[in-house]
Every structure is written in structure tokens, then in C-alpha cells.
Amino acid sequence: MNIYVGSLNFKMHEAELREIFEEYGEVTSAKIIIDKYSGKSKGFGFVEMPNEAEAKKAIQELNGAEVSGRNIIVNESIERTERRSNFRGGDNDRRGGGDRRRDNRG
Image (cartoon, rainbow, N blue to C red):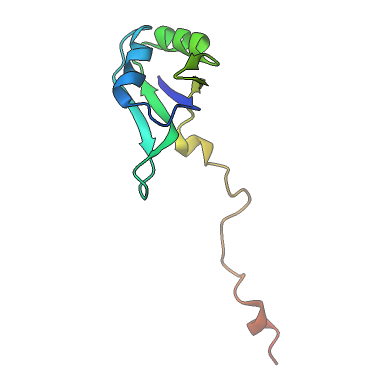
């Protein structure tokens, strides 16, 4: 299960994040998202746990817990493709629209 972890201390390292979740079971990956321009943490990351029961227990017990002076947000991550499937809404077919100014020319 992929787990979203937000409101992280900006000085936290991936090894620390992994250790926190390993108390609940096996962790296959722990990733803190880094800003590509500044090289600094964006304050959130993702943890992957293969055992769903262990992952759900970690989510339940860690959501709202204080870690490094901050109350972290922990919940099941929604895959980006699922979250964005209805992002634009409506019909994306752009045929027939065109530039309205051309339609009004004599």
C-alpha cells in the first residue's frame, strides 16, 4: 500500500521516515519529495508497505502524531492517474472550436 505522509519537518531524512513506519511492519520504500529548484524538502513524502493490514495500522496510529515537533498527516495515497481522471471534466474533443475571430470575418 502506498501511504501519503504530509506536514513533515523540513529537516527530516528518508531514513528517519522509514524508521517511523518500520515500527508497524515491512517498508519497501520511503521517499521525501524534494523541490527540484531549491533542493529542499517540500514537507511531504510517500511510504510503501507491502502488507495492507500493517499499513492501515500505521495510518491509523500515525495520523496526527507528533513527529519532530510537527503533527503529521498520514493517509492512503491516491494514485495520480485515478485522482486526475476527471480533472478536466467534460469532453476533451477540441474539433470544431477554432478561433472565434475567424468565424466572424466577412
